[in-house]
Length: 457
Image: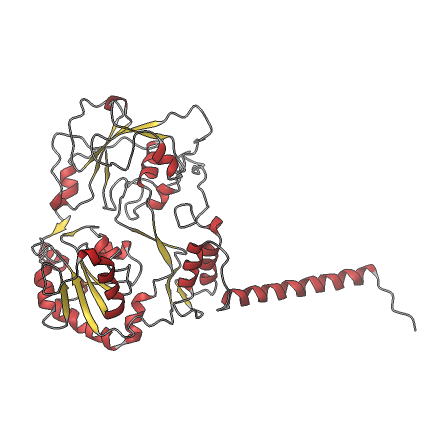
């Protein structure tokens, strides 16, 4: 009996079915690889560390919680970590460089929101990091280098253009100068304004403050155009740290690691300034009446030498469940390394005092801290801490932010250079920069709860 003859049409159908089956098989296999707890990355050490964070400290498979409720949120997050070309240049190992900014077809203006009046809610840091002017061409000899004159301070910025090339700035046609202020496009005043002579037309004067209003000088007889501070409404925001999610839709990850395991002590605090403006010492001592609070340093009975700072903070990871990340002043957006480094940098739950609760919510990883103003007073806070101490699952829920992102370098000099090259920026100045910096509502003498209660009565 002879073999059946295969028509061309039948061969085409067989090949189509075989191809479809192979595609299904490959797709299933890919999902198995993504979900496999034994898969390993082949990228850089930083990428492998980030991937291990996503898989949990015990190496177990984790489940992501994302705002959309879809199943591919974690896959997209891992994709960003594993593929450097999908990470922006300012993230660890990131290779995705910005393109010239898009323009509106109707108005011809750039779409990127760079200035406070264009977006008053966001800090615009990442917008500025990814901004390249629409007509910018680094290979063109027609681009004039913008000159930034620095009369004092900022020693890390040496004269010349080196810092902009060393930091791989997308917009790098700027240079630092320490003389000839009249030729400068921008004069950067660190902490205070000095006499530099008359201002030339279109010259920008920028005021750079890192400390809070209580510890900075009043500006006299100077018209300030731009500000650079930790405040989100500054022209160039200069935060102490800046958190960035790998995927904004994935803010929480279930970990199998128990951050409460073997911890026998409750609250720790390292402090040396015993007389700040915000009554933090009184709050801590009242809190200690209701829960164990170990105070290390000049303001407490315990000692941990600054020469052994690393060992002191490692003690937080091993022994303590909570850490008081109290600032010395309650001022808007004033969140320092006390929170970001001492607190979030260790496996301990920070209890914060300083900026307004809304400021922490916008700057910190979601559900990574407890703000004192969430409670009526120290007694009520202590009651909640005792509840967390007795409930490992609830306590561990405050660590699900780990592995969802990273603290980025905000490249202050790169952003300043890019902003100087923004041809569409509107001329501006502060009518009274002192009022903006230290006016009503910027700082609270005591708690924000009390401040807002008094304001509303």
